[in-house]
Image (cartoon, rainbow, N blue to C red; front, side):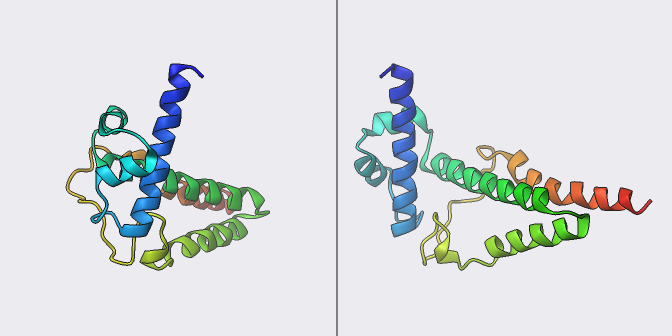
Length: 146
């Protein structure tokens, strides 16, 4: 196994361990030490791959959003018309947005979330891309009516 492969495996282990810890204990009650213990890595390895616990959370969150985007794209591609596409996409979005807070993989029933005062570590393109799915199909519907 190459050094790059080991690094990718370590990063993956950290993300999986953090997801489990956040789901079990919530963000606020999870410490870096617990994530490291569950991942089988040192704190040095953790901080080599991530600058903070919040960075790990944001990566998990962005991956979750990308998954939603994939579901929206699939719903749109399966539709035979713009109205059907909008209905399918809205159904997918509704099923995600109406989940109880404790069923999200990163939040416990305590509802603790990381501080939102620092957004510089998140990828704003991920959030805007979700609205792009709806914008594109709405634009296609407008063009179909012309």
